[in-house]
Length: 107
Ligand code: 2BA
Figure: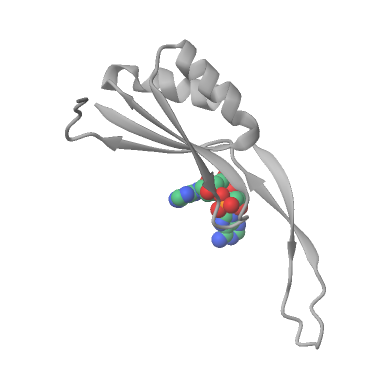
């Protein structure tokens, strides 16, 4: 058994989760925050049989889009003021971790 931990862009989360639940995966959604941008994202936990891992990853990939996001940055220019210069970063699609599950119980 595996545990898939996928960090999704908030804008993609609904379609990723809908496609997974329609395909009969059990999904838990967590509201999370990215450390770099400090903006909200969504992390999903999916416990699944090894044989279904590829299907889950395909659905996550299909419904996750990469985006460019512009963020303000404050360079150190050695002056008494710090002008704000926008910087563009590529965010996503999804960041996915696949973990082996040692034990799974439901009480
Ligand atoms: P954030 O930490 O808010 O990062 C958003 C985007 O900013 C990242 O997109 C990446 O393009 C950029 N970025 C992050 N750290 C950076 C840095 N130190 N310098 C320059 N640019 C940086 P993604 O790579 O697609 O990541 C999207 C979100 O997925 C991240 O949001 C974070 O919440 C999570 N994530 C990504 N990699 C991770 C990892 N190795 N471990 C845990 N969470 C991760």
